[in-house]
Length: 250
Image 1 (tube, rainbow, N blue to C red):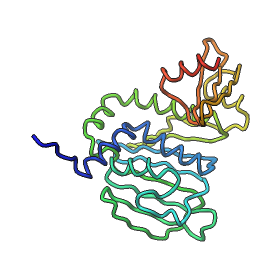
Image 2 (image 1 turned 90 degrees about the vertical axis):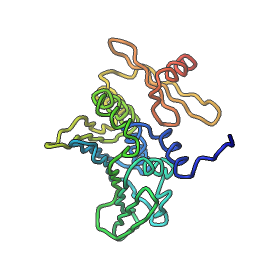
Image 3 (image 1 turned 45 degrees about the vertical axis):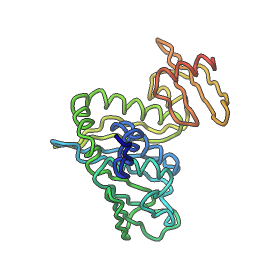
Image 4 (image 1 turned 30 degrees about the horizontal axis):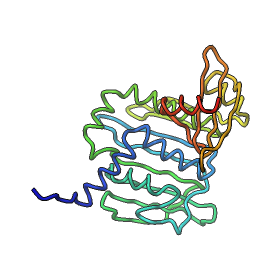
């Protein structure tokens, strides 16, 4: 039997599913975009009624430059955003760069069809993902079945991100009513942020380089030893990798 090549749309879907595989990883990618844009405040919203309707991440960062109004990239980490688009029905991006007179709204569907219009807003960016993982029904079922576990993972990711910078993050769930699940105050001092987010003091900080990669390890002093590891200023949430790097650095 001859080998048949996978069609382009299926290949894109497989690739996207490997990079953005659940709600916490999707939100992590968008929040990291906000950090790269020098945001001081990030608002994360999840709306679900009978289904997961949309996920929105908004910030007050530098916004997206008009020259980046591209259907495949559009901004700082276009690869991640393109993967998210492949997993969803539509993405709506509303942004205003520091040099813009007005903002712009970009609407993209999963076929890459583009609609761009001017629309006023303050400096910053909001990215709204409509029907995330609509093409992955098994993952939506898994989200419903293990929603509590996914939310705990998401909060842990946001805490790890909020430790590194004086960033205020608010996570809310919208259903029949809106409830705030997590918020950080964005304290200037890392000592204050560690106390707020994890309830411990930073006992030791270790920095090292592995090739072109910068690794930061923070050791917390509390009732039990806690270690937080960051790879190029990105939190490592894989416990095996975390323990391995800790053993090398401490």
